[in-house]
Image 1 (cartoon, one colour):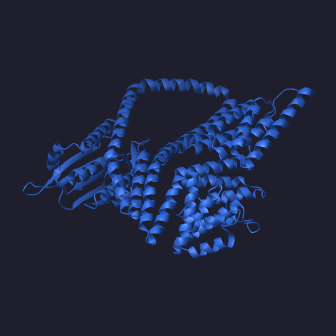
Image 2 (cartoon, rainbow, N blue to C red):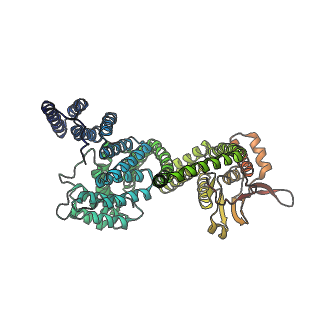
Image 3 (cartoon, rainbow, N blue to C red):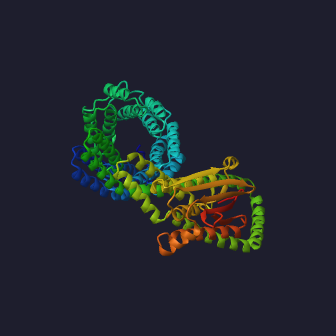
Length: 639
């Protein structure tokens, strides 16, 4: 929605007004020329014409014209040429003009476009910050259309980086902005986006919201929104193992060879629909048709350089070739997937870091700022009513602060020293638990599954690894962690090691029922290094089946964890380690853990301890090793 900035103050003479009108007419004429060049597909000439418009805008004094023309040029740069730097420079100019005119509505639009550009450039934190600013300005101005548009954009950002709950909340909030009946388009878009918040897991929910989006499609089912809704419904039928119904729906409502079904560079409807058709035909064993549609989708995604969807389509196409016995073609596609996954890894890491950073912003910064703003409003009202009370409270507050500072000076210095040391050792422990050797061996195991064409195990292994990395990164900021989250990290780590060692050891987790119900907070990342020691030291040269047992029980105000293995024992392990330096990081991890426990004890949690016992038979032969870890339960602890 394009809105008008507040007019600049001042009187113009008749001659000045006429000059401004001529300038405005010239700009709109130039815009019409640029638009016609774009629609004629003369992109280079159109780009040159739009850039000329930008120079003319800078010499224009009329804010209305600057605004109406400027945002159209921004949209062209972003959507059709990806000239993001040109768009950012123009937005900065528009921002200055809107600030000068005190145009709140214009500022909301400026920050929305900032967010869209940063999102496209994979600068997700900056994108979120600008979407938040846009919503703040839109709320201040009371504009439901800008609020709706920004919520949809922010919801897509949350969905892409892996926050489905927040994404769904934004889409539902956007729906509340669509109040008047004339906003059929906005309502359809909102329902479609809500339906995409349930991918794979809730096909019935996807069906429900897509059917709501079909209102009005009875008259014309060839609009983009109707096509997307029909495609999503067909995909939901496919996920519910109803391929016949999915194909019948498509035949009744969509013609894949029609003029309106064309491959547009900026639109993912065409390749998405081709992929849906390919999946349905593959499920119905129509392999030639499946290959045809998958190939069309593959070409379209390749044209867009959409690596994530290229991987999905190539894997599906590989499975079809495998079913018809064309193994060379299937293997060639898997090799292409492997190459693409190497490129995709950087994107995944970027998304994970962005998710972690944005998670902190969403869960902490926004809540804190919102709470402080509300408190400030309350305080201002109270101050306006009773100023003399504030003076008294101010004096009392100063006296209280001076007293507290004086009494607590030494204890705070001690606390900060311990906290700093704890942070350093915690980061060291994090590096030890996710060390490069472990990641290298894990990816080697994953590569082995892929080369063996064991897609199921490869997928399970990749899911387990990504989950472990995400959980470790999410908990790395905290000194303490919920027991169930700690167990989730430990189980993921053990599962990955079992996959790596091809079942050479068995692992059992025994958690007392009372402990599971309590789910207390305990010091984080203490147990994992000892499990790693048991696996890599205890079973490294073990000829028998390894057995690892991790048991946790509630003992008063502490959690008692016992890590026991039937491995070669510490004495034999030390002899082997003396000849090799490959596993030196394990001793470093144990040292870091012991140092963290010592720091926790200094900070007042004296119940932390680690006892290592050698298990021996009557002839003093090793039966394995037992590590008894005592961890305090944290009561009302604030990170």
